[in-house]
Length: 245
Ligand code: PGA
Image (cartoon, rainbow, N blue to C red; front, side):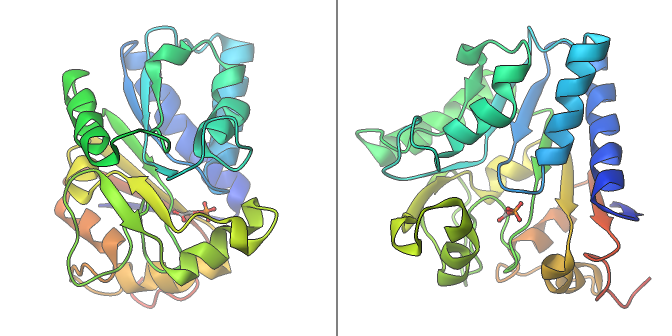
């Protein structure tokens, strides 16, 4: 596991985007694993800048997103499809049909989840996966629990996640209670993983991972310790509660 602690969010985004730009330049057919939320915005901004100013080419790239709320369609402003289009895809030269975000309105959700994992595999698997982390230690919408589902599945959101994410909705009542989320195996199959965390509110979750050599399904992000190519990029605030330095 490689760990970078950067001074602030800008430096974190700079570090993450440099790694991604290098990978995209090396492999035109790259399959990107993408995340939503506040954390990757700065990274996406820098990738857009690299596209506009240096011609970073996404024309043959594909992408798979981690998750989507059940019941929201892609033009709902709080859906992850809407977020991805607005924050990233609309500003680069990726073909929309090469961008996959789980369909929260799929008719048969269980069948659809299986199909999503199949689709990732058929496209050669994810080359590099970007992850944020929840204040409760979740990655994607894989919530802390005694047991975790390995593959893409329908998950029930924890109260803490609903509260955290209510800032993206008009009111907390509007936040869906369930989501489609890639499973822990779907994520661990990625060839490379980058986990990003910034801000004081992530410090406790990061300390739970970095201060010991254990894994626990109650801290889903700790399972990343099983992967051989993980880079963790934090800002100083997100690192502030980690004692083992
Ligand atoms: P955030 O969400 O980037 O909005 O903090 C991260 C997550 O919940 O995985």
